[in-house]
Image 1 (tube, rainbow, N blue to C red):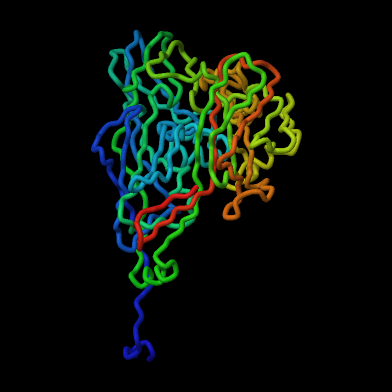
Image 2: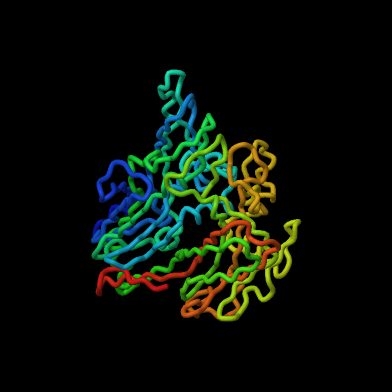
Length: 473
């Protein structure tokens, strides 16, 4: 009978509604090529609404492979780089009202590195293959443009790949807190696409020299997808009372920089201009400059086109250290021998186990994945030691031809109590940071070193002040 007693005071329910959104690019283009930018605006001034960071942001689009002209050409193929469709995204910028929240160049190289570290083969062969064009080996999905004897295209579906790529490595996707969207300005997401020559490896069915146009690959039917969470007025009132109208969002971000090392050197001291309050981890990959393709470069043979982004060589390193204002990290250099044994302070083990999401020891990781005809070699440590003699080409079954080596240091796990009291990493603000490397042989060619620093950041939205995010790193 109590349920029929309507004289009692009724309280508003604390409810939330989760809805999917799909946003078109603000520049209204229907087709994109390398170096083009797609710009999306996540709306602001949305009452009681948050961005659901658990689902993150996803870029949905089609990759379309065109054709080249060659005598008796029956098949023209593109194998996407290690990161699959993410290999097509060169740069990611997220900003609000002129405040930059994320700006990361060469984000596709970072995606290739992370694919080597953390990608479970079960995911690669199933969900990752369907959504992102990922595979278990050293390259991604293969698109094919096929012709019959008359030169007409056949099986056109093989030249198109529908993808839905999670946009990782930014302050929105890395936050465990939902992002308020009731600020006074929209959040802008700007994506720059990689040139066609660098997104993967090409192969022809005939041996000819054919220059590749940037327009050989196009991106169409593009949209930014995610979820809004809208809560009731009663729930929003309680949240506002708790926060006093000021929302502090803790997250992590990535900063990138790059250095080029000349050929003929056996030791390197490379400056890393990353200045942040809490550097959690630093990762470095080494790429042979001669195997990084440029716009307009040619396909010159049946199977000799390298992976520009994901071929990370092992430059015959004897040891390395990170130097910050004269202090060494680790205190003893990280050493290796020819059998891939680790000496010193077991840094690689710490690096690999620092983040459970990397999941290296849960099964067969693709960390040492390489290409080749024999699947038994997919997880051989040879890929971790591929050096300047490696071709970087995923086709042809060449052994140890695509490298997976990475170096680095985890300041968060190995924190010595010298970090900012708010964070767990190492402050590099105003510091001189260098990557010191000793090699057993001189560099055979010029080498590009890509550095990726993950650091803690804070965003503050004062709804009773400016009404847009303030950013602290």
